[in-house]
Length: 291
Image 1 (cartoon, rainbow, N blue to C red):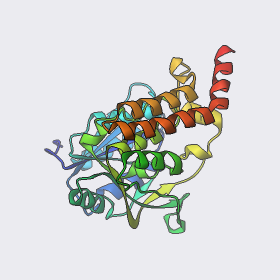
Image 2 (cartoon, one colour):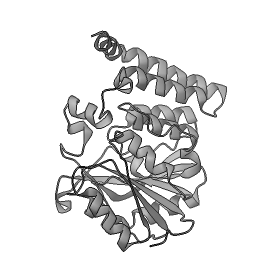
Image 3 (cartoon, rainbow, N blue to C red):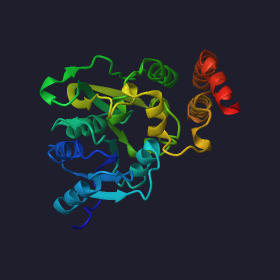
Image 4 (cartoon, rainbow, N blue to C red):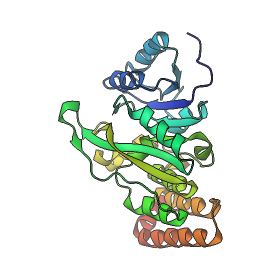
């Protein structure tokens, strides 16, 4: 099938060994009330049937575009890979494990169209393990609607627990100004902080996002070793000093954001305090490196 021309929205789905859940995730997107989108899927060299399932959907629906990485490049790099192929004015990341209610895309796009000061819109979340009917409401979703860019930045950095907001719809032009999701744990939170400096983050009242929470799909439920494998499939220099890389990510965002000098000072002040609070983690990273 031919590629659709100039979609308003690109949905990017990074995936790896998701044969058990990817059909449900794709079906929930193709059933959206809003249809002017392309679905770009990047298979991260899965060893199960994930790629054959993606190929099946590519044959069935012209909106589905798939690519397969020749090797496992790590979860964060695969998230960035789907954005690199985006053509829409708006962009959404979609996990191959989660489920979106039929009004998800329409309500997020409508909210962005209404308010040019908002860079990211996300709905509220429900959490589930295997059965959507047994999903429970999550109470920790955040909005960053403060007038001050530094206030939004600090609020995102300190209040974000489960990073559900990153699964919302974001302006392509704003996301292009960031470094996307870099190669260290916590880089997704740094990205949200960067977006908060660039504009407001809005939270819809409706619970349209269903996030799967089990040990196979949620990093906060994995062991430390499993989280490292998730981010670093190969033991390279990129896997060294993760706490230092996280601190540098926050510092770079605060230094380079296009905000006033006063806002920049406040953002930098928080970063320096956070780095001091994390000094024990950074010392452990150095000890691990010396070993």
